Picture (cartoon, rainbow, N blue to C red):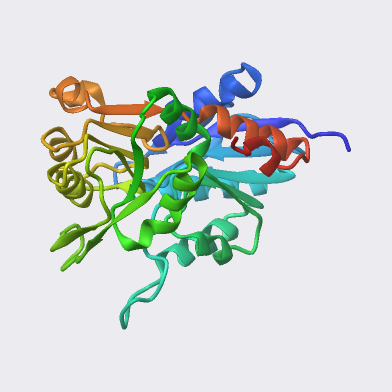
Length: 322
């Protein structure tokens, strides 16, 4: 089957990553799109190049504010009306993913609402990385390619050459994710059990397992205020860990997260560029507060995914870990 022409666009929130992905894919700059802001806060996003009969990709993490989500939706609608054959939303970080279930009365399931809006906008496929909950794939009635950042994490961890490696989950809910790495490296794992009295607050935390003399890597899908993460790191260090690192896919890093990480027992926070770190120009303490943070790019992984979708090849075969 002949492959279609590819058009790769990037919306505002993920422009730098989009440029890297496009360069990896075909060594070409991004296709051009425009966002115009009006004085009342409304905006319009549109395509500057034809997409008729193409596989059209939009790269956009749906980080706050919700303008980023709506910009993605507008571009999807534009592609549908411009007769793109396939319209693929590449969402490295899928926002609202923590609202994946009804855990008390009278609350929305925000992740399902976002999935419905993405489909209504006209997208025919979604590519994303490390969803907060696997079941979000089932909220869609279109194909979802759920990639794992282990593709970039595993080679980096191997390069560290840690002799007494052990993986840790910062809470009970993350044990499945942590076990994947534990099995890949044939190591043990430990768990932190926590109580959370309110959002972004951590109550009591207890360590289940032995970390004495070990080089610990805490595994999670996202780091927000870093309250849970740094508390877990400090507890493990107090329990005799040789070193404590964290390996987190999505660096949300809100509130006092940068300060929390810098002042914690963490040796290193290993993360990706699904969400850009704070703008260095507007963040005077950038160098000091990011010196513990190592950013690995997912550009190669997403460029390969785009290629495989366009050439009708399996994505699974391209991302098998050894």
